[in-house]
Image (tube, rainbow, N blue to C red; front, side, top):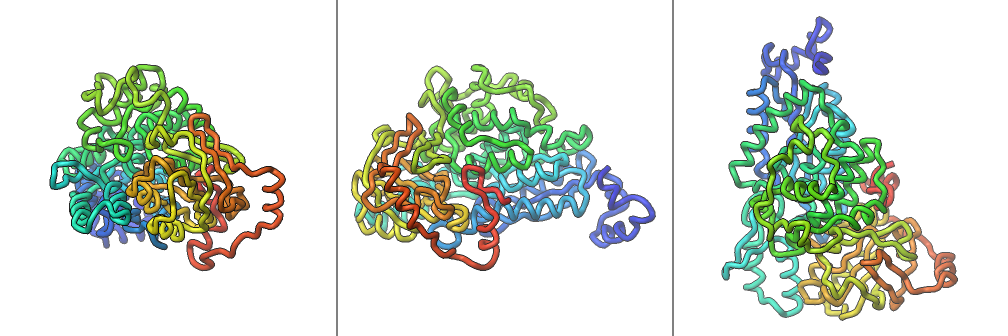
Length: 553
């Protein structure tokens, strides 16, 4: 066993004495040592219950003959970090989580790992660590939050809460109405209840083969979540016994499956940052352009919030991720030969799986659209590409042209939106918010929600080299690459320039001549970095562009 390096032989007597100091017995040290990486904390609603999940995992490990050893991973609540300097620290934690988990796992020579994440960056961060460390690993998340219920019986969620702020500023909602949303949007622990980034990544963990069935969808407050955790604890022992490792599971075919399922589910655009970053750790390069190729043949089968009025609990009731996979497999859209953390192939996992609600998971002959949930656009404004969640765009905004309203940071844009300075037809451009320029590539949920809450989501587009929350809807186009701080054309846009967006044809065009753009480029000077010290300053020096997953180089 790998743990023999710290438990066996005369020369390891000092190491054993330190285990004994921790209260471990000789018998426990003779069993496989399983690291339990738990992101529990008291600041993230999706993580407040993870201590219970960890205890269930450890029970499962002990039942199957292993010795569980828990250590922590950090996590940021994107909702609490939203709209201020804290959001600069969200995406960057992905690398901190991957690095620190790698260090802990290899320093202590665990035989296997059980990862217990739940929210936006620690799911991909731990998947990156799993690929990097490459010892038997299984994931079990904390589960999604239940949807809230308003006084009139309507269901609600966090994206409605953010949009309510825009409605308040537009005079469409009074303080009592705002407070009603505030008290009902997030009624339980768990990752927020729509197909936002956290739930997208937990579903894709299941789809890629690293989590058991139900990992992405069983609600946090359901006891089935604890049973799932116990089964994950038992199953890691089988993976250790058979030496099935993450890179055996996360193959190139598995990533293409994940992108296909992403398109069918209508996942967050943040998956277009995280899947390439995870693949990179596996030695696989995922092309940004692959998204359109996969989308062109993958129907969008689900419209969970913010795209529609259904929630994660509905997807779970309908059969969850496996039911979506079964629909896709019937059409030959998935490679079902790959091994998964169950120890079985995808085909074996899907045997007997049925879609229990064709209104929640539409069948292939009645999709929401014939193409997938995400599109990559290219053009002279984004030569290396940009991303839009097309499943959450109103039909009338799929093609749009309007004058640019240019802002060099999110804060200035949100002030203008709340002040009523953005009008129908405008194209809001927010730049210098990319991985390097931000630094940290902030999510733009506040401005997109304000636009939607004011009733302008069918009239106004927003373009940024930053990124969007999975809760964003409307013609919100992010990840513009190259970013402004790297000299990208988005840094050359001037107030009033016309921008044409054509999502069906995957194009985005700044209607300015090449000669004029060259003249502007000659005069362009990169602004001074906003942050010059600490982790963010180091991050800005090493981070790649968004089209490559914002990985550190």
